[in-house]
Image (cartoon, rainbow, N blue to C red):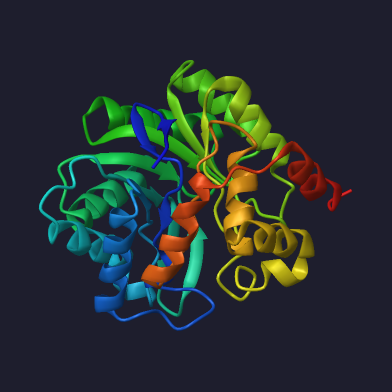
Length: 291
């Protein structure tokens, strides 16, 4: 497995998005299958797992996804090289009311809850899940910095951020202080390409979420929606999904796709994309379909 830098860590070039274990457009797998999927990821060389406190079947089971990840890792003898990233800042309440809270009090409570769910004394990577527009962006980043200084989190990331917000985070944390930006990016959602490239210029890891197009069929049908991935996959004897991940990896050494998976076979296939070398002609064909 190739590795790439994620803040202070070196992690696998392809990570595992754990959200499908707990929620999504399809029925979530049972706990046994979810744990087997984490184990398959580890066996494939994956050393970065992405979760969040709101990934849960219902509002009153927040932390469910983090707990599943923790259980899966605890049943393996040596996971010292595995980095777990989680997120906070989105709220869920009775009646499935959703909101955002970037207040210091809320984020501190969220961090403590994630520490308990993950069974850890410190969180490897803590990411601001979505901006709270009622608050000054830089002031919320200062809260994350305080939590880092207190030893509760090792690295800071932001999610669903635009270029201005990325620059604010870099200014508050200092050059090298922002570990990652996690935005949606896939063949069907390319509007964060400018953020991806901006991160590359600043040495910030870019983690595309839903890199295959989402769990609601977008991933499964990516080869039909974008035939060039199917064609190139057939030429290499691999799945179109592998071609998509390989294309995203080619966009910069700072790009670390985190495909969601609910089955061992899915993450095993995605992880193999690190071995797929696309030619310049193939990359040109892929880019050409978007013009």
